[in-house]
Image (cartoon, rainbow, N blue to C red; front, side, top):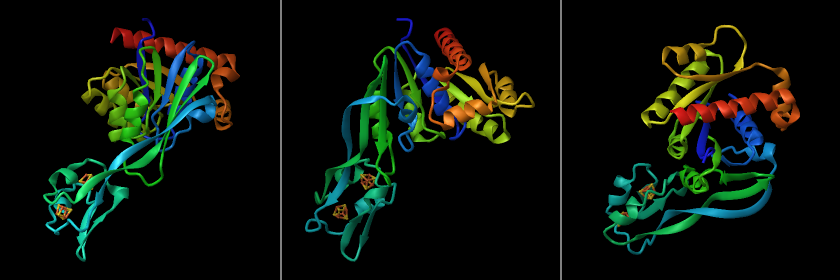
Amino acid sequence: MADELTIAVLSGKGGVGKTMVSVNLAAVAPSATYIDCDVEEPNGHLFLAPDIEEERTVTVGKPEVDQSRCDGCRICTQACAFKALAYVKDRLLVFSEICHSCGLCYHLCPQGALSERQQPLGVIRRGKRGNLTVHSAEMRIGEPSGVPLIKALTQNINGGLTIIDGPPGSGCLVHETIAASDFCLLVAEPTRFGEHNLALIHHLVTMMGKPCAVLLNKSTGGYNPSEAYAKANGLSIIASIPWDEELGRITADGELAALHSAHYRGVFTSLLEAIKAEAHHA
Ligand code: SF4
Ligand code: SF4
């Protein structure tokens, strides 16, 4: 199938234009699935405004202690890599907000004093806007890891064209997002900081063996450190979107530039075609 492709749109940090690019690519696709993996700060749905068809809670296991069984051996507190357990004044304390649900402590406790209790991590939603299916998630405030939400979201990749709005940065949420994709579009801005962040995400994508290309966003026509990095490292520059106050205003108003102007419809249609061509030759 020509459109059997999952594109992850990534940037080494927020504010580079990753969501703007993702939602506009989704808007110009004749039919696609859009997945917002930025579970800590999802805002793709604000632009796409889907009609919500389904919402469900995703839970994760956290330890619950039976104090009457605990003999204070501290095997669990020493084993927990996240320091989410402490034995204080003859009681085992569980700090759920920093527990990463690895499950190790239940397995190690020789007294069977720890068991797993499911707690809500967040909600995932599915909605429709025309031929676009939109999946997003919202993590509960204070949760330490949204990885289970991303795993739940990426189960919706269904063999057609999927555009993933990745989380910012280069941590484990990004790692999970890259793993689910076929091709990564690295959005970079024309600053030294932009170059640094591009290098971080480029190394991660390369390490994970995924093909990628750079989209230079907010280009001013002057020296662009991100462009220089891409050229020096043999990284394909798929397109450049010039700095445009009007694009910034449209986006700040929560509108889709591709639907707002024929110019940007053309820009994002060409970009999507270029990504497909590059991905299929990778
Ligand atoms: S391993 Fe079990 S018995 Fe030992 S301190 Fe932890 S909960 Fe208590
Ligand atoms: S489940 Fe893992 S992270 Fe959570 S308290 Fe137990 S050992 Fe620590």
